[in-house]
Image 1: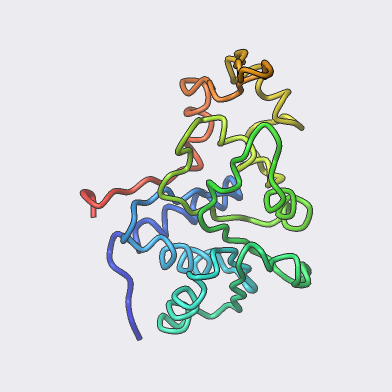
Image 2: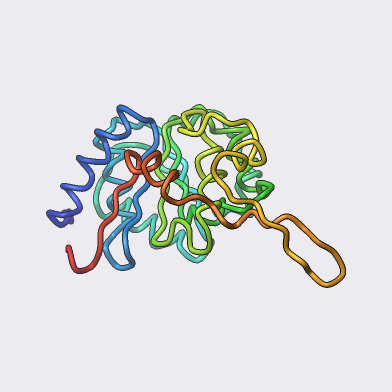
Length: 204
């Protein structure tokens, strides 16, 4: 049976502590550090029984291999985003969302984000991404909005934006639209920090 690296074990324990308190933990780890394996181990330590892992299609075989090679006790279902709606949402007690920054569309949530919220918002969740907000801190809102344990107590992005975004007009040539990309990072970071675990290759 394979074993985890020490930093993966340490991060797993830290993540479980956050989950027990917040019900959400965001693993913002750089590539090739084992985000997936760390997340799988977190589920084991947390005591999950039936885990749904939503990811890209090309990553499924690798995740299933890690699950098998490390001998985790819970049941794991791995499915790609495009097929997630085909499964029965009942029976899961834990959700892992891979490449979770893809759920950061704004000002309106995308289809997958709405699907997670409508079916799994009551579950403890692990979010995985090496780039949680690649373009704007406005991408943070819907990533947490999909959970009932969202630290932002706003029902819509527009209400949230009134407090957390400097909304500007953007001239497209044929029309003027509202630009919601100028989020107030200094206000947002302290709120999401307790949920975040960041780790770099240099630290590893």
